[in-house]
Each structure stands twice: as C-alpha cells, then as structure tokens.
Length: 336
Ligand code: SF4
Image (cartoon, rainbow, N blue to C red; front, side):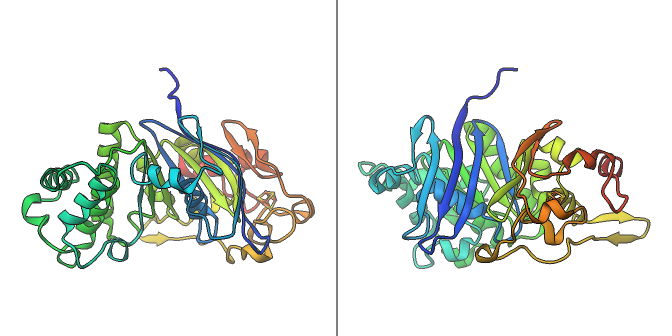
C-alpha cells in the first residue's frame, strides 16, 4: 500500500517560556491523512503544550523554534491573522472539558452554527442552523433538531463532548486535535466517543491527533504513538511495536499501569515517583530518578532519540529491553 502523504509535520519543535525554561524540547512528528497519531504522557510531559504550539496558542512571551508545516505551509512565525483563519477551519481542536469550553447561555445549535459562520461569513443564519443540526446527527446525537434547541447543561457529559466534536469538525478540518477527549467520561461513553472520532476521521480522511495520558485509549484507536516525558519524545513507533516491542523503560512503566487480570486479582503496577518539574529537570536522562534500569551514565548523559528495531527510542540501554528489564519482566513475553 502507498505511504500516506504527511498532512502536518513538526521538526525539532521547541517552546521556551519567557523565563528561559524550555518546555518542549526538539519534538518531531508527522500526522497523516486518514491516520490516528496518539500522543501519550503523564501531566507535565509537554504533550498538550506541543499541540498548542501547533495551533499558535503558546503561552504569551514564549519563543517557538523549529518547523511546523500544514500541507507544506510553515506555521512557525505565521502571522496571528493567518493562524486565526486556520484554527477552526483547517485545524480543529477538541478540549478535555466541554462544560467549560462551551458557552452555557447559548443553545447548542447556535454555538455550532456560529462556528460554521465564523469561517463562512456569507452563509445565511438559517442555512448555518441546518448545518448545525446535520453536524449533531453526524456525531450521533439523537433527535438532533430537538437537541439543537437545548443548552449545554441539558446535555450529559458524553453528549456535550459530541457537541464539541460537531463544532470542531464544522468546517471539515484537515487535522483534528483531540486533547484528552474522553478523560471525564465513563468507560462505555469513552468507547462511544472514540468510535465517533474514528468514524469522522475515516469519513473525511482527516488526520486525527489524540492526546491522552492513557495508553489504553490509544490501543484501539491509534495507528502510531509518541510517548512524551519532560518535554521530549521518549519513544515513537507504530501502536503494535510500542505495545508489543517497546524499547523504553518509561513506556514499559506506562504499559504496566494498565489494569491486568491475574487470577482473581486486578494487578496495577504504578511507576514510582512523579514526573519532574519543568523548572527542575534532572541532569542526564530525565526519567533516571524513576527508572529501574538507571545506571551512572543515565545521570550524566541525556540519550538522543535513535532507531532500535522498529521504534525510535531515547534510552542508553534500549537493546537490553529485548531480554527483559532489570527486574526480570520480559516485555514481549509478558504481553504476547
Ligand atoms: Fe532508564 Fe537510563 Fe534508559 Fe533513561 S537512559 S530510560 S534512565 S535506562
């Protein structure tokens, strides 16, 4: 099958705050049309700030360097006017919490119609309303013509997220960025929302970027995965290679946090400690204070991202994960 052309491509993307702290450190990735890219990491890993840089929504006073290209158009240093035109039209964004992102004093239909008219100013109000109802139907909201006349507080959590998705795809974006779109939802509704997103992505051949702290969410939805930590990519590859043949202890730790049934017991193995503060990143590999494989070199030299087998990994001892971690677990055998 032919390789899918890149839709959105970031190269050596860096975001430095006014204080001089670099919070995104040389991130490169490619989102392809009709594919889902999962970006995974704990809070503070830099995954959301990376995507905000793509949208031109970095913190005030921060400096962005590197390259972000949308269908070949450079977005780094693009004028704000141009970014405003792209946001909501060619790049759609779904936020984590629809309750705070959606205006509570306007009906859902009007909210979506406004999103349509923002990028189609000549469209008559009645036509935009019809489009809003169609969009609610597209995201499987039952009785969309009735629901369009209701307010956000009359929608359940899952229905609000569907309304948010309808707004985000109102102008058929090339790329849809979904930032923790299922975090506040129960597992059943989570699966429904992921189905809606996948359905839209297939139908419109969009590139979908799914940001989440939960590897379980990307397992069934993503084609490729980036694992981020302390503002950097720790590992990237196809979802299958990352899940079955990880070459990074941090990814291995995240996978161990997924619930497993062993006999009668539900076993969870959290990663010890917490991610570092961006202002107090440890020297060397940023994961070394929590890593079961850390050695002296890890405390001094920060590993570069490099190819090992089928993945890119930033670990000095990536090859050793083939034979199992220092604690005796064998990553491939364990999940085979
Ligand atoms: Fe662990 Fe060292 Fe690899 Fe970092 S470089 S993940 S500390 S083994």
